[in-house]
Image (cartoon, rainbow, N blue to C red; front, side):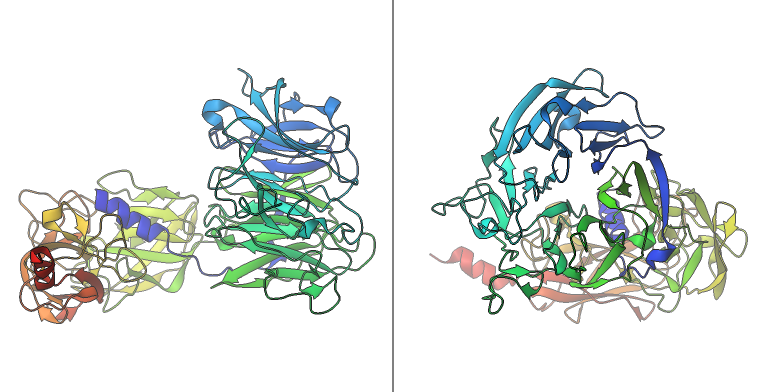
Length: 632
């Protein structure tokens, strides 16, 4: 079962193809109204499904999934100055909010300065204790604009604070480039050591003389909304420009901090001050930018979120953002590190902020209304060539009855679901699969763009079969799936082709390079490997479709099975279905003969003369190990 869990993860998290969407096809669905000048939208990650919205005037409101509650979650209007770019600017819930009840807000106090403080919820989960405030961070603001104001907890558990440059055209004191100022920066602080917050020990300027230790990155003008990609951990920052360019800046999840995003040396990719020779190649240029119209409100980017929800898989990976001044709704997609903007969609909206719910669905606020981004659910359609072996992601000579397979397409499910036991269900995620009009396919996993299933044993002996998928009351167009008696495929553990091969004597340790996977080590000549595959064909004592194979008597392969490692034949001690699982085969092979050593030694399984995909294992030279161990 442990291996099955790993296998399911490998199948579920296949990287999505770059989205190809038209922003005009999106639907902006009104969720609720009655909010006054929303500045942030978020959730508490407490399983409640609630949305929390901050109002600029100083209130935090709750939408409980049905309606906007009349009683505010928090009301601190008595300590907030609101207007222009000042006010209650965001709320962020502690990663352990479910147990400690702590949340943080960023607001402009009555003196016009930035305050980040902590509050605690009362025994009523919909009401906070306004008297529980503890101030964790303060910063003087020289002017009324460019306060930034977004706070978010990162995947590392630390609190990130977006700070604008303090206002004034062109950042007169050059605060954004001054490491002795918190203005024009992204700060990272630890709030779990009590108030006030302390700098994180790994912050990049902690030991730099004269630098503020809270600084994580710098060179920002006014980061009006930033977000973490919940899948990758990357940061995307919407930074409002001066009179020429609006930009989206990017920090990868593996960054050690210290990025200089350029302001005021640069505005976007253009030199600002000085007008030429402004970049010594130390500055981080934006991944996205667009020209504004140069007037008082000719452009003002509102940073957004990258879609990682489950309801609309065709939106997967799209970064949504907008322009507050022009009303343009914007999007961008990334492919192998290269970003491309989609054609903007004009709207009559002044989009103030974006937010996510617990499931990763994206919302935005327009004046008093909160909208959710949706797209019409497509009719179920199987992609051309989209029915493949789950191990190789290719159809090969045809799918083998009894094997594990994957189908790709659109509209293939209503929701994401995983089978919770055996026999595998015929209906999963709001849909089902049928071969030849009457033979149900047992389901392992379902989401709108993908289904993992077992090819029914009842198809044995056929050259092809007709497959349809039913979702709700819609049936997909049929596709013809080629079938074959055998179609061997070895499962891999990563995208480097590491075989799902485990060292039998070591309790299931992967036969891979040390450090490549948890507990992995190279195999030694003479050891036995347990290799997991599918498509090895008919077996003795065959279980019913979707049923788990028995351990006694075991189901052994009918066709002869061989194995080669480094091109050399190995001794196959067993081949058959893995007990307690469905559609998964296990081959026990002993490493014999003169095997080449290395971290990527080819492994191939052969059934009835047909080769599997080429995978890799790590093999250590036994003589070299012996020499090291006996060296005085």
